[in-house]
Image (cartoon, rainbow, N blue to C red; front, top):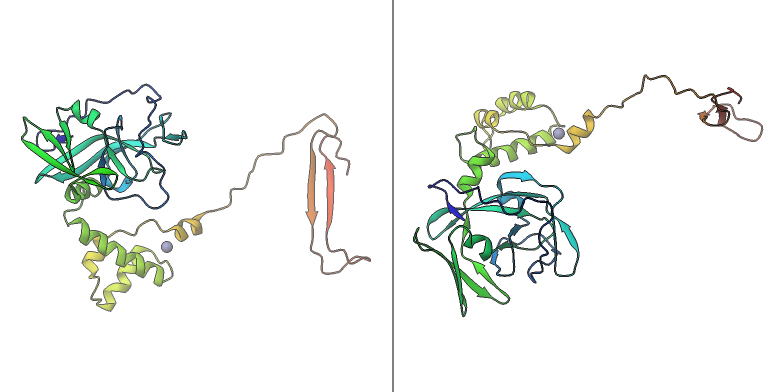
Length: 277
Ligand SMILES: [Zn+2]
């Protein structure tokens, strides 16, 4: 972890050479429901791990890296990034967190923290994560099975990283987009331009034309699907000189006039080399 104000230290990337050392922390078990919003300070974890992708900033995809969880299953690490938090009234950044959607809870590795000068102490029900020279002390409380860190996600930093071009606050922005999305769906998926034109006639309480303009229509699956087009190949068929190597099959029908036995279709099987049907 590093303090944001004093430039986070991103240089200490642990082994970038493919596979990770074997990981056998009991907390690294697979998620059965949605990820938890807590952070466990886990002395068994060799690195930081998180299933909460929406916490990440500076996220990068990772390939060919995996860990082994408690039941022996190998699970791929999907990406790496940093998580901004507020702890002890300071803005902090947990750096080099591995994104693994399959795990239950975010795990903070004391071993990884120690590389940045942090000390982790566990005493009874209370754990402390301390940076002596920066005079920061984070608390972790024992709850049933683990030490849970006392923190808040730094949504301000998260916001800025996700929408750097907007000056409005993230929540307002998100809210406007939500309303805009809703009208987009209600009005038969019209484009943003027409949507704003329409809304400007209506004088809505929940969305002014100005805020609609700054809001974004977010990825609408139905619209994407509607824009899919069929790709037709204009390439001539590959020819062959070998008889019966390629057989083309065509179906014709349904015909309005039925055959003697009620048939409505026929198929042709054509040998491409000899053109024999
Ligand atoms: Zn749509």
